[in-house]
Image (cartoon, rainbow, N blue to C red):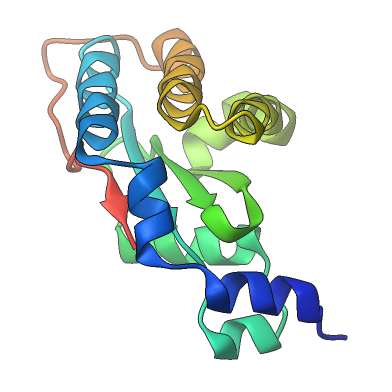
Length: 166
């Protein structure tokens, strides 16, 4: 069944609204948080925010989770040497955060660990705290990556640290 309220919210959302929540200064802070994080471990983090879904996926009821998996693939987050890439994805129209992690790191952290981080970010977003919400989320992901993939001399940056606005 189609959710008319959700469809309307997605289709009426503008790039301006996303840019207001994620201005250049916030995107730069997110990029710096990712750089700092990756200095402490050999994992790879990407952050992507998408304003709203287009009409076809909306009419088919695509969830934020399903879309996050698509973005994980499109950004090639799965394509890391140690299978320890992590995507933090925000579907802005739904204020829904999803974390998709490559199989090796996901096996160590599990769905519950990722959901806890997502809920913390979503709580910050409800108060309009997008920058601190994302930076705190990155720091929480960092704790898992440091535990399971500590920094080594061999570590290299395999994925861009720049946030993606879709």
